[in-house]
Amino acid sequence: MNLGSPDSTVVKDVRRYLNEFLMDGRVIDLPLIARTLLVRGIIVPFRAPKSAEAYKTIWTEQGSPLIVLTKQLQQSLQQQIQEPVAIAMRYGNPSPKQAFDDLLRENPDLKEVIIVPLYPHYAMSSYETAIVQAKEHHAAGNYPFRISFIKPFYNEENYLNALAASMQPWLEKEYDHILFSYHGIPERHLRKTGGGNGCHCMKVANCCEVNTMAHDTCYRHQVFTTTRLVAEKLGLPRDKYSISFQSRLGSGWLQPFTDVRLEQMPKEGIKKLLIICPAFISDCLETLEEIAERGKETFLEAGGESYEMIPCLNTHPMWVATLASWVNDHNQGKKEMILNG
Image (cartoon, rainbow, N blue to C red; front, top):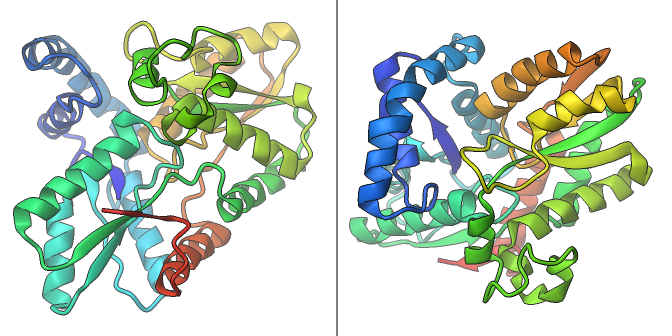
């Protein structure tokens, strides 16, 4: 289960997609009336034409890169496991309902569907909204099978090994620094999901160490953990990498901001940059257009000399093998990666 994409680059399709996406109360967590006025009255009318142009720069003959790559992941996984594999999107097509219907039609004795939200880290605007929607479709359809979920895998050993392996060839090139650019979220989302009673979240430098009970749902803790663990696997010196957050929408979002850091780094002597976006499993608008295209332009115009984006895991063989291992472990009674629906 991935984020989703417009059906085409036509403005009306992009507008429909943005309305569904931004009207999600876990993405823009304002009261319905305020959210409607903001999204449908201000954001979407101005953003849809610009987003349509952005999508055109990355669109392929097969369609949206995110959809194409997710289908390729489905096909690669299907070659390694016997269980039928389907895909669904949180926004747009195909929906969880369509995936459930297709699976049940082809497998009338289906007992369980394991849902894999393709988000390594927990956030209310990504992982949480995906599982909530899947549960709603499952309940509304009165399906005879149960559903389970793969939990956020930000610190899972095989995932980290796959991420490190995907980065390794790029480290053989000459570079000054690696920037781990994660999707940004509003700080208030942290206080809602990972901040417990809000007494410490984002209020002290080591807030994630103060309340370890929040780690399972704290996006900031999880992205810091992924970065540290994969850096250790790759033997990266601490001064050779850093973290930033991209795709902000408004004020009060996690910092430092990726676009700001890309402007600052050349002035700090970082001329040759590698950048990776581990919050995304599949390359999409936020990686291919925002980072690979606009990010490169920003960095080079600020005085940088070389800039390369390391692709997402997509269909990396070690990542596909990791997914297969989670399914097989579940079938063998090992429950470590599975959450009950």
